[in-house]
Image 1: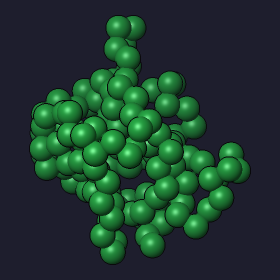
Image 2: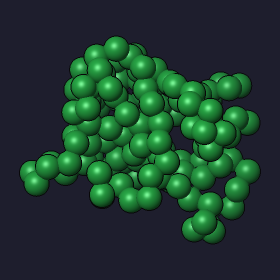
Image 3: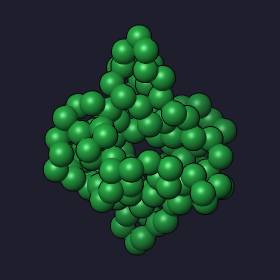
Length: 128
């Protein structure tokens, strides 16, 4: 399994293809938010039912995780140029998810209309 803390520390990037994102790591996902950059009117979509294949499909390869957001369109176009992001609440695959110190917020950034993604561990997803 590939650590997300090591991947982020090493500056690894992912990529997006339409409604699908490819992450260069593995993680145990607890919750997901997709949202526009913060404004008084924007509220991120929260995905908590990760078992519903009509909402999200999660696939793991040997060195990556692929998330397919079935109810969204082209994520790079919708969230690119710093218009939005995806936030994961996750733990490393080998860590105990019941210990709060093992849970992290991972911000996935869409910087432009290219398909490249950046990653950052943040303290609070509501302080963006």
